[in-house]
Length: 165
Image 1 (tube, one colour):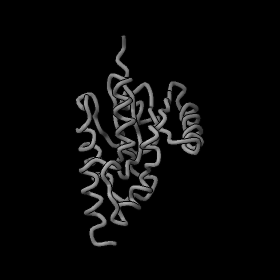
Image 2 (cartoon, one colour):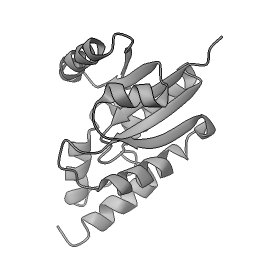
Image 3 (cartoon, helix red, strand yellow):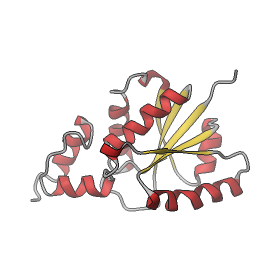
């Protein structure tokens, strides 16, 4: 049987416990997983190099981390998928609004590359409120980050917002 390689792409600004849950669940479904950190396209709190470092630190804490790698990409997702040799893209969805956003992107990617496949994993209820925006707001206001982001990410957020508040 051919090993199955999945990609979990995103901006990861910052990587949250919800993102890590999707990666961990993808590792149970696929032989290898590549976490692909997007560069460009939007303004981010953390620069691309730091988001890559934080994603690597977060993924290293997972069981089976040896079957997961973190890389960056710029440009079209279908090109990154092809370059990494992945068979499927895994996306987490927190609810209908996420699916409404993800569905047309998957359709466009399939138009660009007929071999493109997308798999959607429903967020666990206890993590379904997490988003980068919400986490950044909690951090900006000095709120508790435990259970929202991995420890290295919490430290980076506290440092980033240290002089605000």
